[in-house]
Image (cartoon, rainbow, N blue to C red; front, side):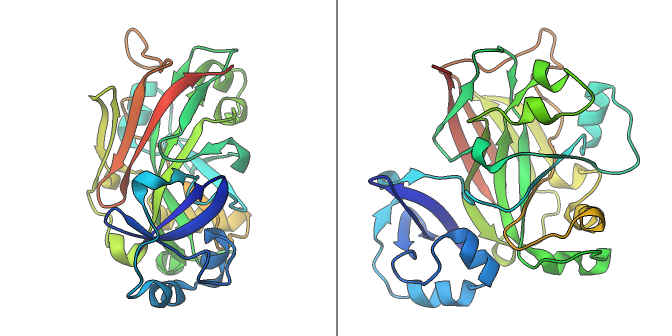
Length: 281
């Protein structure tokens, strides 16, 4: 199944996507939002509610929200592809490199990524999102896959000079309007095995990142095992699993996103996330 969070006339909705059509679940189910549906694991209810129903909207009629606007945790992973570590010259820490992003920094598909007034160093990062469906602490590697509800796409807009102000990534990863998330939450059964699916970024149509998910150093199961060793994961939490090589700051000269640019993150079988860059006003 493929879910979307969206707005019509400023009112928040969520629904099931079939092709270019949406069946609005927010008026058919008791769950107020997609987060609540994931917490309840109510996928069969959603399928039954949408079965045989005429679509309420087309994708062109709605404004996309971050696919889960209100996750309890956004746990991000840095330096998690071999080629990204190589291009940055950073050494492997021996464990996943984890930091946190705040929910209020997120935007949806087709929304503007905001380049802040204080920096011109706005960079792209294509990332696979792992959506937690079943919570737990000390989750073993062999049980980790059963805790995955599904997947989405993320473009973690990064303000590189702020990221390098200290040893922590937090400032450069939490500017408002920089965390693009969507367009869909696709259930794990629909996606199937991740394998060597492509993950790409295009900037104004030019391919900038081009890798495969099997190039991750720590895959989804390993990330769940490690993260659950220091915090209890809960349904609706999201893990943003790291970006491959090809980011802008390592290029010579560096390439930064600027107002009017169009950036696309595409993950095979998961979705295509498109955003335009705008300057902060």
